[in-house]
Length: 254
Ligand SMILES: NC(=O)c1ccc[n+]([C@@H]2O[C@H](COP(=O)([O-])OP(=O)(O)OC[C@H]3O[C@@H](n4cnc5c(N)ncnc54)[C@H](OP(=O)(O)O)[C@@H]3O)[C@@H](O)[C@H]2O)c1
Image (cartoon, rainbow, N blue to C red):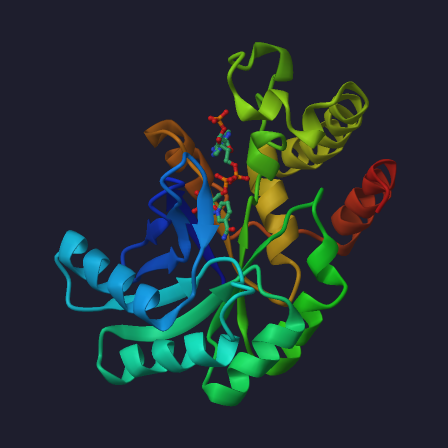
């Protein structure tokens, strides 16, 4: 079954649908306005217990580590995850942004249910190793940044962004890339029109056509965006549509 997950909030890293409650852990404020990653066992447990209190729940369905922590062996972190599973505080443990070698090491300690990775038509690096590995190994994949931070949404207008919006400084926001992405949106738009759908629906449908993808996380910012996304549930693309998109993506170097 494929899922469309709607992401609520960036810093809270909390996302939910009717049946599942999950969160990612590891990125902590460093007290100097920055962030650091910790997957030390005591930190994993402390953050989970704080979340259980905040959420007024006894367990989370899915607890995912955020970025890898180079200072802590994954075996130590993953052993703690499985202690939390055995204690009933977590139903399933997952990772995020972890490469194949770390997923493999974690799997030797205990099951890895998911890996959350950046995936959209403009960011396809995971297609090389991570997605095939996850598919072969039975690890579910949740894609983040599914709308390329909004660059692949219907009404995206780079010039109209607030001066402080991070997308003004984003790699995709450089003039040559804005021009290419505008052309790509037009290609997605032609397919959307032919199916009576929106560009955002076609972008998500393209992602979910990858057999490794279990779900696509969308960072909705308003009720309107949430309602709009729901209109795309169940859209699937024909081989011809996929071929047209693949051809259009050559402009982006894919
Ligand atoms: N694991 C990780 O390392 C990691 C990293 C980043 C994010 N995430 C997760 O992934 C989620 C999604 O990522 P994201 O928020 O960075 O990127 P995203 O889903 O690619 O894009 C979010 C942007 O898309 C636009 N949007 C959403 N729904 C829309 C709709 N129906 N119509 C038009 N525009 C729409 C909004 O733009 P406007 O602001 O212009 O309305 C929003 O800012 C986050 O909420 C977070 O939970 C995980």
